[in-house]
Image (cartoon, rainbow, N blue to C red):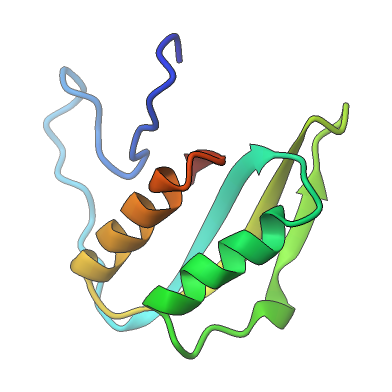
Length: 104
């Protein structure tokens, strides 16, 4: 991406096929990968934000993976998604931290 904005990768880019995305049946497990600059407290910050949107979230099940050169880190986790508004609010709060480059 040329611009520094974050894009919701679950939504098709305009101009792509007219297929509608598959519907998700809530509640369900929902996997996320949150990518940001490598820092000691990045995973803890992600867990704090996620816990506000999923009070049953267990931070013990996360996977922290550094990039090859150590500049970035990805935090992989699964939440219990209760609906689209919850997911949108979580994405918005993660983006608003200013520390998250991408949420997949």
